[in-house]
Image 1: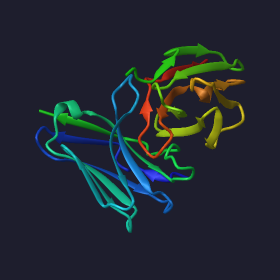
Image 2: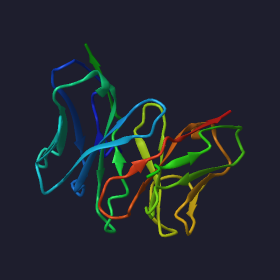
Image 3: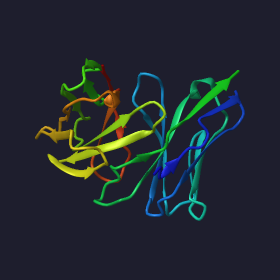
Length: 115
Length: 112
């Protein structure tokens, strides 16, 4: 049973435009959400996170939106750059022991930003 | 500050063998988590160690085990390897509190 779903396996965007990556979750106990970016032959790199007490978090070109009632979050990248081309993973966690260290990941969305 | 390191980077084993993977966390980090990534799947949580104790566990069979040493380095062991164990095994470290995890480059295990 997939608790975190990224229904779009791939996304193609033109350089300079907005990239929107979506993620849905089923477990209402999740209270912390993260986005990671992964290049081939490297481990995932942390991008941005959001706590369930917020509905938006921004960091430079990256903004994450959380809609708790819809159990949906999205990552916006504006403007998109060719270097953003990678696989993006959405992850969620339930704080059980004071640390969000059991992350449940989606299957990933491959973003291609073309000139 | 050095990042998370994993050894070896690549490994080829045959069915029935066992394997041990190693992870050195970022200096000062006390939490180490292990994940398995297979084609078409997201990263699946295996287990987490904090201060030498397993604190969280995923839904993997008992053939998958781990441990953590007093210097926070961690090892993961898989016994009686199966073809389906072929995957990228990722280790991540964090301080153990509510913050993001930092991943190593992974160990690519191929079971023949």
